[in-house]
Length: 268
Image 1 (tube, rainbow, N blue to C red):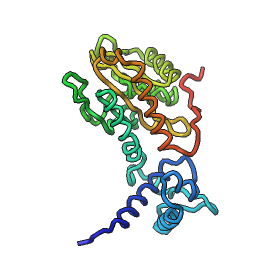
Image 2: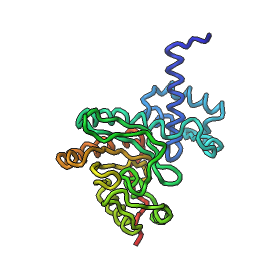
Image 3: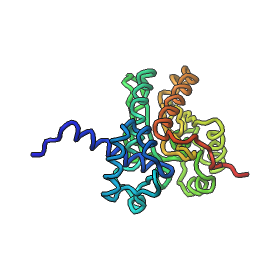
Image 4: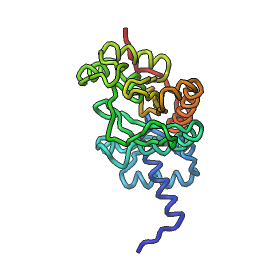
């Protein structure tokens, strides 16, 4: 039987965090940037980074610039990618929002087909509440999580996705026209968040904010959802607090650069 000491466990965790850090980075990172981003001593960062270079996980491209091995980046699903750090970083903020409002909180990430995968959720314990079920995916074209993400993706890509989807009215308020949905996405982008009022489930409403990396690309979205009357009772403070949570999540996940929204939804 192998017994790991606390130091060994700490080193293993730090190694995984370093790999995740390089996976989510927009470019090469220095030892100082890795150390500061992960709050790891520089001496430990130096040792672990050079160990990962020796094992073929990282590459040294200049005196103090390192990057993930390009061969690894070509392999889908290796070592966990960005979704693990997103879940861990969002978790405390999801707990905070649940404590503040006692309403359901949902974290979703974009899938390749532009629908949304539910990564994590916090279920409201109120007797009458929106029930969250961890399904493999939910549609992007008619949900606040989907709208928050789609509103920050390229116009042509989003239009093609919405056009090919089989869109049926789930409630009297569901938008099924491609142009109507595209117009709503433009509004979502301009105001910074997506509202969904009785569009997917009659009687359930909420707000979702995209989680954007340093280039303005959506990596996830955070949603609070509840019964419609309760949402409108506290709409403004709910929007304010979800926005605050997403801002903190983005700063922890992507600390190196200020975001610049370079992708335009409406190029006209």
